[in-house]
Length: 161
Image 1 (cartoon, rainbow, N blue to C red):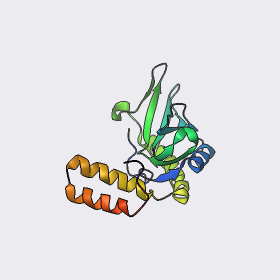
Image 2: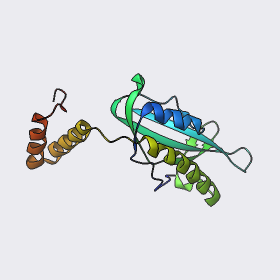
Image 3: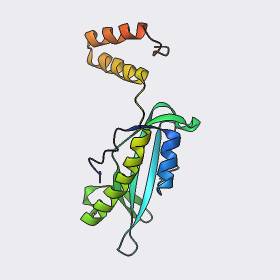
Image 4: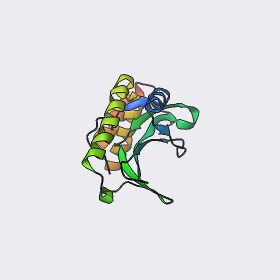
């Protein structure tokens, strides 16, 4: 299930401090990273026998790449999931998460969010302009497209566009 309104979604943080404070709070950088995405998991033991829950916080690189260790990561909405051996983790609403478990997960994410706010970086201008240009092209909005191109002529944000 999605843990909504935690305040962590949308934050942009450099990869190195992000991984450092996530790991110092018990989150493990999953092996499922690639050049553009990261996944941090936190294991929550359940009061029920043989049941394990996980908090998952994912992010994607808006600049740089994860493999190089130099990337600006935008965090996504955290997930709460239940592990089923040997199949994996299910994140659906129908998993029957108790209110106390949801509260426990939100408290853990809140602690991480407080740390994250210390490391938040602004989205680089060229990233914003590139995304705006892509949107303007997609929408066929010539006015915005012309304005972004005009701004681009006066700066060095464009990379072989």
